[in-house]
Length: 109
Length: 115
Image (cartoon, rainbow over all chains, first blue to last red; front, top):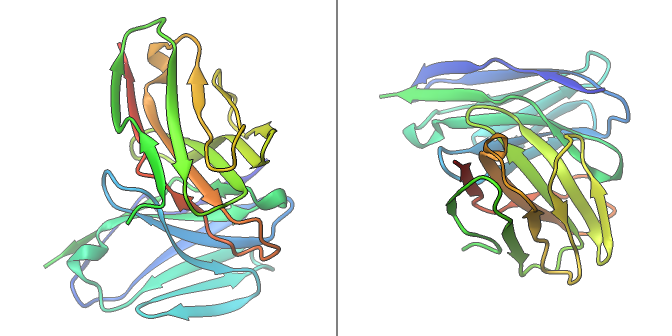
């Protein structure tokens, strides 16, 4: 089976930097994705790591270490609009995604 | 601008009723998925399809069924709704690409309440 672990909640102030960790145990691993979901909204794609290392997209970066079965999402220069749930998801065979329970990020002014 | 549409957005229905949740996408994507999500919880894959006339059950056992008669349409049906079916149902699609990083595009979901 598959399992993913990520913190349930994280809080920070505007302008700060936050790191959301994700550890996984899975078979048939192809990569790690991150999705953002605002309350009542649809999940939206943020990033994908197939290889070890850091991927940067604007204020957001994502890291993967396949040997450690570990990844993280780094959010810089936090803004109020970043308050949302963030899900890590492992990509399995045939393109299926297996999601973690999500991390609720609250950004305070 | 939504490219994947789900209707209804909210549905309250009595036990035993048959319901169909609609999902359509205008992106020409071959792959489509149904996920179930309870509040504050992870998304569970319940059905997926890789093209017309192709449907598979997902990781979470579900009493629902799906069909894929047209590329753009992937409806989910519950023959007899029960209170345990109360949840949010999210439809998603992705292109038939060899690239493993093809992201999923999600609809806004249907919040189903069975009384």
